[in-house]
Length: 441
Image 1 (cartoon, rainbow, N blue to C red):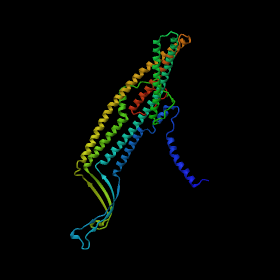
Image 2 (cartoon, helix red, strand yellow; image 1 turned 120 degrees about the horizontal axis):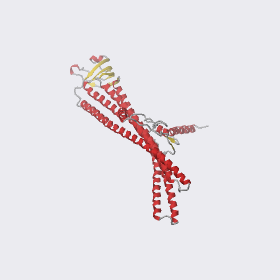
Image 3 (cartoon, rainbow, N blue to C red; image 1 turned 90 degrees about the vertical axis):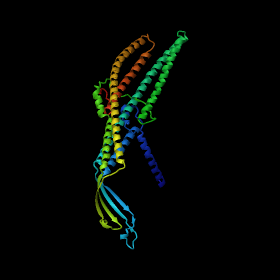
Image 4 (cartoon, one colour; image 1 turned 90 degrees about the horizontal axis):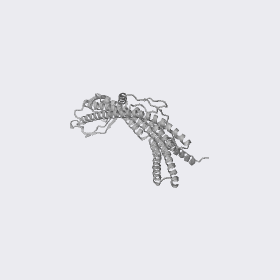
């Protein structure tokens, strides 16, 4: 039977284990092997860039709540302790000083402020809309980065495989030359040349091996899993052919209409214009209604009435330059937003042009690789026949060329997918992976 102390220890242990279990659940290991779909799903998780965008969105929503509450009914309690010395003509002989204390409850509401509250509400709504666009843009950037880092790991593995095969081929060539040199059938100069070739490919293989680790570290960081290097990756099924993306101008028009960052700047312009109107409307004051329920320590004149209804119009005659300053600041913010939007529009047009040209170049690269594939496959068949007929010592060079072709074909497909993904991002389309056989732009 457990003692009370023992039960207390068990309770403490459970409390300590709960946070640890939550941490473990939040940091579950990466799937093995890691697929692109799983990596893209992890891109939506708790990354600093995305957290920052979401925090800014929460701040804008909080600002909107504050702005919307500006015209709400307000209830205040006022209390005042006051001692007054009455005028000589009304002073009592027995009372040299009055205790004029009072307390009141005030229910007030601003009825009209010449559009200032409405303008501030529109500005707050526009700011929230802009932050939502910023969150979408952050998600797009996260998916692009994860996709690129995932592809880099696969390319690093293929590069290492090619360089490892090339090193093995050069080593065999150098080793055979050593045997021939020992028999006096191969010169020392030619032997040193083959050794230098082997050392060069050996160093190249070491660089490729280092890139395997570095690319995995970059992928882990992009997934917000620093130090958790993924092992095996599942190569995605990608289209072998891609259709043309069409004319340039429709792509530019679509990007200028739907780019999330540009839309965020447009909402920033709307917010700045609304704040400008709100600042100008301050010159006309406001109209406020209030209901007061008060109690006084002394009943003097109209203060015999415990309830009072006020309707107050406030017209600022002088603000000391404050209103003019706020108007100037709002105008400057609007001008800056317009300038930023114009600059971003130019950058977007240039970016769309460059991606469009890149896709055209990739189309030609695909045609080149198709011919090169036919050539190297035939060359490999010929080398295999010569090897079987013992007219060729090995198949090393041909196998290296095939490995290099595999690397270049994979790089071409990845570059084509990435270029289309960047084009989707520029046009505000959610980034996703095309299915096998899908070749639409």
